[in-house]
Length: 415
Image (cartoon, rainbow, N blue to C red; front, side, top):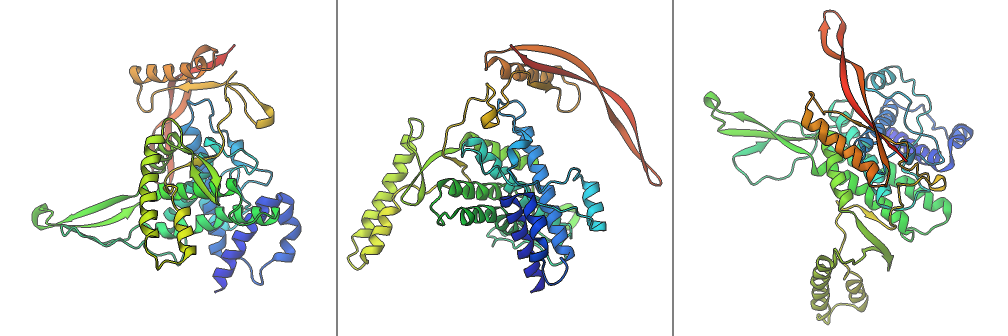
């Protein structure tokens, strides 16, 4: 029971620190202090959330590295402080856990002042995904004392059976939901907005869920064979998280398929355009037919019939990203909207792994396209960058590396 209180208190502090700004948590921490010190569980939870937010920012930058909007780190911050410690690497994360020297871990969330466009939708989704992914992973690694294995779905295939310890996505999903959705709920409460009557908040909550769904959708089933002489007569299987890059790729796909919505009758509804009219109308005809059949039953109360009519609009799937406003022109700088523009933007083109001339050329063309699409010229510069390579572990306990030179092509957009 005490642990549940501490967890609720920690989430509340995170939310209020974000909504009010950095000074709030300092000025009010004494008045709101819990009756007993915060537990190790609370500290581990805060560090997991912090690390999850950081990998979200890093992945967002990777996914949009060749786009006009390159997902700047500032897009994740509001007027409140950052949940991200300046150095939250795996090593520093473990050090902070061991020493419990968490220097006021406060909250990051997608920018509440940003317009509800396609890019903001991705920010909400990738943040929720990063936090849910990290919490689930740390749960499986035993970072939280009372966090067990995930619950497996019923199976119909007799050729294999569930066994082992599946990653507990339910834990990561629920904690991330309470944490990020709490920001929206607190914001509406402080602004005096009735629950469910703020279209932007509804869109944010939907995109938060879409991010968590992305983590679940990309989970993998891993199996181990059993049988005489490796015959694999039976298999035991369990589910595990995919690498976060797979989650980022999935959400980038959802970003490209994001739905423009509006707010009517207390719900978010997809706007019909030339590109989606056939699909939306087909769904609408199906739901209208179901509502008509529903209304033919004379025993159904009038209030239920009215509810059926309100359900005629096709329901937006949880995995879809939604937005309310069109994106601005990211080619030109706009200080008022926090848009840096493309002039002076540098794009690094390099092979993903070993030097590959074809891949390098493709990346150069992608970088050049970034500039030319905005009517700008390119300045190409070849640079040699030193990096660690051929690292080896020496007993005990040191890692030695060689220094290798790596070729990079830097493309800069100029007038």
